[in-house]
Every structure is written in structure tokens, then in C-alpha cells.
Image (cartoon, rainbow, N blue to C red; front, top):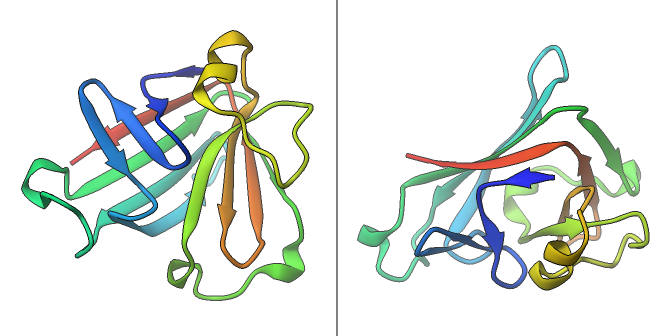
Length: 137
């Protein structure tokens, strides 16, 4: 999976010389696909818990493209609204069960299959894709 960022621990994105903590400093604002299903986008907005907020972008997006498939662990666990739940994001491969993540070291030594997005209520989503890019505003 091609990507322009690395994870520095679960949900902490290393993008160039910046660390962006998606779990603590950002809230999930949107999560969906385009109408054709060729792209999945997770949109985040900086919250009041951000340390040195003036050094962080106000909005961040992870955009997944290329052979996109989305798989859910248990649709019965969806509770609305999801933005009230904490979130963890990392890579996964074919060996990971639904409670497992790959760290950046493992992801560098083998090609991850996509992103694993896990909510605190147990709901998890796997996004299979060829490319994931981080974009900021």
C-alpha cells in the first residue's frame, strides 16, 4: 500500500517532521465513500485537546484509493453517532485478526493491505486499498 505518512504508534501520524495525533487531538468528522465506491475518506477536525494547536492543521483527511474494499467486523455494533467514540487507526495484513494492528516497523518490512479503523465500542472497519494519502487544511 502506497502512503505519504507513517504511524508513530496507534493513531499518531508522522507526516514529514510533524506528529498528528488523530486519537487525542482530532475528532472524526466524516467517514464515507464517493458514489462510485472508488475512494474512502476519513475526515478529522482538530479539537480542544490538541497540544500547541497553532502548530497543527485544523482539518486532516486520510484518503484511500485504488481497488478499494470496505469490511466491517459486526454491523450490529454500530452505534450512532460514531463521533462520540474514540478511534484508533493502524495498518493490517492478512494475518491480523480483528483485534490486531501492525506497527510501522512491521508495515515497512511487509506490505500492509490497508487501514484498520477501530472504535472504542468494538466496531471496526478495514479499508483494503492500494494507496492511502494524508491531506491537511
